Length: 84
Image 1 (cartoon, helix red, strand yellow):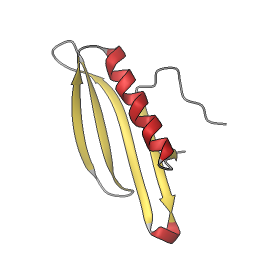
Image 2 (cartoon, rainbow, N blue to C red):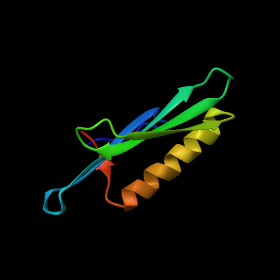
Image 3 (spheres, rainbow, N blue to C red):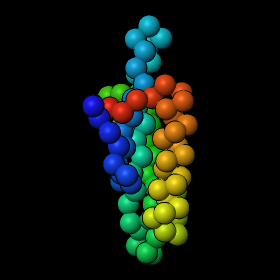
């Protein structure tokens, strides 16, 4: 059984539905930035492609982790599961 760490720094989830031709990935990563804060890197797209990305800046790791958890929960509700 796969289990998330308490505060993971890198999460990759996927949504696969061959009948709907849906093969999507979503990746969330926490990374320190040069100004002492934390960046949340969001990557998404079709599995096998580079996809798109967005970077959000946060003052501290706690706020970034909260945003990451909220996005993860929202994606789970839409059918995404941990890639494995």
